Amino acid sequence: MIKLPPDIEFTPIPVEKQYHSTVRGLLTRIKKLYEAIEDRFGEDGLALIEEISREYGGEIAARVRERQDELSLHETGKFLVRVFNGVRAEGEVSEWSDDRIIIAVPRCPYPFTRPQICAAHTTMEEALVHGLNPNLRYEIERCIPRGDSECWHVLSR
Image: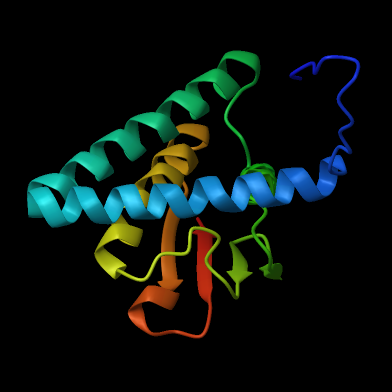
């Protein structure tokens, strides 16, 4: 926290409101950076976004796996929900079975408009899921940037 001199009045923003606004701004900034990378470098830029995203997902999974064994489908689904909640994503788990979990998100938190950028970025989630349990599949069945009304992040056996 930045300390002000004692004679300056300052009304802090409530933490929840400040967190929401800051996260939203950072996600929008990431979107703009990704678009600039693609605009400047084309396919090489998309490959770079994908590479970095995949590495980051693998790093997260490796840290989790240091503390515990392979996660089940349901444990992996809960972890992914935690990741989405961390970026203030809105949505719901619309299917939760022993073979399949769907996390439906009606509004992209980033907010991506280019499907190719979404695909490059979500290699992070794919690498995360595979790192937590290599027997699980992760895919985006529905995608707002591809024209769907919501995104479906699907985990399955």
